[in-house]
Image (cartoon, helix red, strand yellow):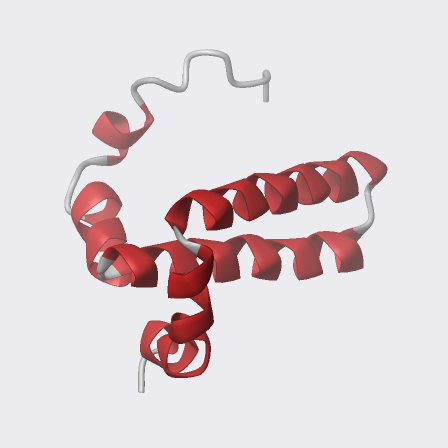
Amino acid sequence: MPLQQDLAARFAARDRESGASFLALVLMEEVGELAEAIRRGEREDAQKECADVAFMAFSIANVLGVDLEEAIRAKFLARSDKDVTKSWTDLPPR
């Protein structure tokens, strides 16, 4: 079973009770924790926070009825690298 379905089977009822707006706030909190772990150079914490961010994105997608894998494939993999990154104008120098 795909990951999104596994998560939905276990957490969808609670996620629906919480609602997409609340879950979005939790997602923002997790993104902040990820940014902090990256800033501190704490790889293990960053790994855990990446999982938290992905989990919350799946939770929101499940509440909204979005197939997240399909949405990512359509938005990023079906387009050229140049098209995907065209708005990334303030990247740090290499």
